[in-house]
Amino acid sequence: MRCPFCSSLEDKVVDSRSSKNGDAIRRRRECLRCAKRYTTYEQLEDIQPMVVKKDGRRQAFDRLKLLSGLRKACEKRPISQETLDGLVDDLHRELELGFDKEFPSTAIGELVMKKLYILDEVAYVRFASVYRQFKDVQAFSDELKRYMSRFDDPDTNKAPKG
Image 1: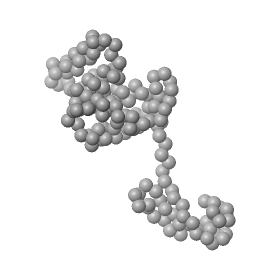
Image 2: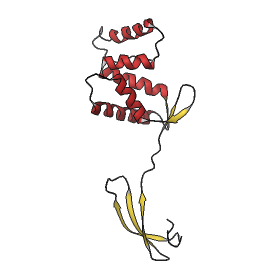
Image 3: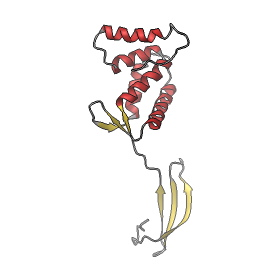
């Protein structure tokens, strides 16, 4: 670490402790050349994953954008904000496990659909209608039939595939 007083690169750490909220380490250093002390902070580098859109464009993953879409789908449904926050956390964790630093937008949409399918049928249909961009009433009806078919066989309570 470069000394802010004399620009020397030689120092020693005289004290080290976690910051108040635990997201950084506070280090008290002493320059070996001028003997002055200064404080540095060390923290994890937060690298936001990128979302690869259908047309190939890339944009930073936006947790709030995902949460906003879920709120719209779950509007006036008995789903708490805490549940939605947990759902976004689960989605983000699953995406990070399945992909490296880039998530295809289609993977995000399909994963959201699977989670909503289990969580709330109305929210699922609302999200599906926007995500799948139904062109007409027949396409919407077909999706509803696929959803309702899960009740024909009580052993299959799985989310539909694409």
